[in-house]
Length: 141
Ligand code: SF4
Image (cartoon, rainbow, N blue to C red; front, top):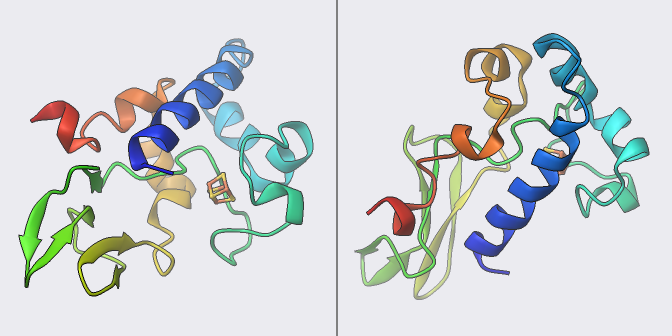
């Protein structure tokens, strides 16, 4: 799946859920996106829910900011680095990278920053698309 396809599909799913939570406070909305609650109430939100697995093996995983505002992608390639095309990266230089002979992708498996409530509160917006506004470099360039 291309980054942009996931990005658009996820934005639509996130928006549909948040619209149903309009009466709730910011803290209640964030709490609602707790992994266990989401897995039960919105099994189609994430493909990992079906197998009861998580992207990060942490307690109290929160799915509100799945994706991350520091993530950048371009399905056409961002830059060439050591003869390989970089398709995604982290603006904070966190995490690692998946590298093949000719491609480099950001690997966020070791970074839990966007799943921590403090980070979510600091970057909160009812619109997931606005939070992730800068992620798609193809769109903003
Ligand atoms: S944060 Fe992890 S478990 Fe939650 S929706 Fe995103 S990928 Fe799935």
